[in-house]
Length: 239
Ligand SMILES: Nc1ncnc2c1ncn2[C@@H]1O[C@H](COP(=O)(O)OP(=O)(O)OP(=O)(O)O)[C@@H](O)[C@H]1O
Ligand SMILES: [Mg+2]
Image (cartoon, rainbow, N blue to C red; front, side, top):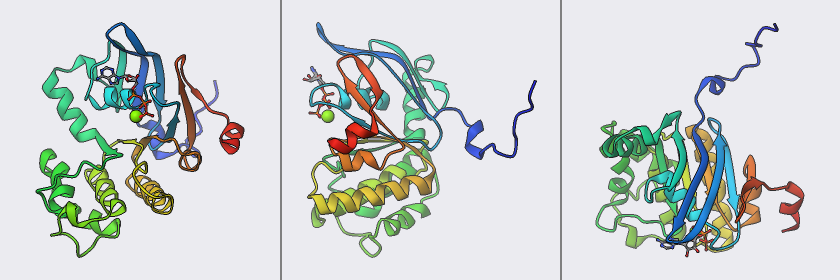
């Protein structure tokens, strides 16, 4: 038997998969939206999901996030089977291991920028100092006491990126994170998002309609009525 090559082993190789979906299914009434989704993300892996409107991309993210319940299949986050946990434990797992970014930002209007970013730290009982550091990392140093209404769309998404990564989640979920931004701002935010994901070591699932956004991912997957499959790079360049 050959010996394992310890020198070429990366530190992340021994970590459990950040996410594993096995035959995940979802229907609304009699209408099946997701039929048997298989998806595995290694530690730190950055994956883009594309697909026609209405095919179930947001539904898939919502199942992973616990915002909606699957009809069947298995979901593992950081190697832990979510189904084996009671509701409280599943909520704690997601609170600690996941970060979210939405198209519509979803900042809390009555909290300052610093308070918005500090929220995941507060909820997880983690030291608060990183909130200010993250705000500075996304280019908003000095704006700590401002409120979301005082920001542009791009600035709001910067705050959302800081909030999604401040507690060093294992997995970031982003649903069309640049969908509400003009093309120039979208490119800028995408670059920032990718560098902050890399810096934090999180794996990421980014849902996007933008071929440019998808091209920056490690892998691009296409969701169709039949399931999730690798999208060829060639097809991406032609899109
Ligand atoms: N709460 C719900 N009740 C009933 N049907 C729903 C619900 N949520 C989503 N759907 C349906 O499930 C399908 C998938 O919706 P989903 O929002 O996941 O699509 P999507 O791929 O994210 O589309 P888009 O690119 O437009 O955001 C749609 O046909 C939608 O109407
Ligand atoms: Mg959607």
